[in-house]
Length: 297
Image (cartoon, rainbow, N blue to C red; front, side, top):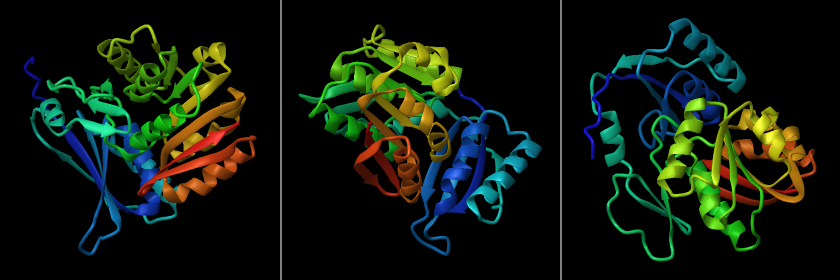
């Protein structure tokens, strides 16, 4: 393995109540390059969550402060103290690989390129190096989507799937390798599209996963390939709610929609929003505090 670069890094840290996690996670997702969320399980802040955003340069103070104020107002909480600190030079890539052990999630075996073992029998190998894009399989929202795909595969086949907000491409890879069909993968971040394309090559399915940078359901790649019989979107509650009408319009009658990136308390709002678009809730997969929702059009 090549020597990984040792780079400088900065951390943005804050602690918020559970109901505010989604709003502040959206800010860190925009202002930093990697976001981690941890529930505090003991002490005076038990039940609160610590959010860490890691980036190579400190975010602009004025912009960060403005977005934090907006998130606090949206979540209905007091604005939390925000600590921005330099972490110093460390081998962040190497440490991330060491902290990313292989995982069995339903029929899928998720691992990084550093894994040199053997994929267990009857498991579908997903080689994912997330890099600067979200999606290594560790987060409960990604796990929920993989479990939903595994359950769907027992009942029906996918013919024209879409991974909206693809990140590393892990869900597009799972669909391509399970059903052996071409998958359209889209992310607003060009870097995510690049990472997803690289991961498709690593998994031997470059001809099945086509990743594009684009503006959600309004992008040319999506409009040209619609309608879809399967859409997976692991994003966040607010953008999912905003795209409800566009997602429903891009689906075939009888198609399946899998949504995640939601805290369990946000589920009722999203269910209501998508029901008004003619979609029926078929399944909830709860991996506390996150939930994955499966709809049928």
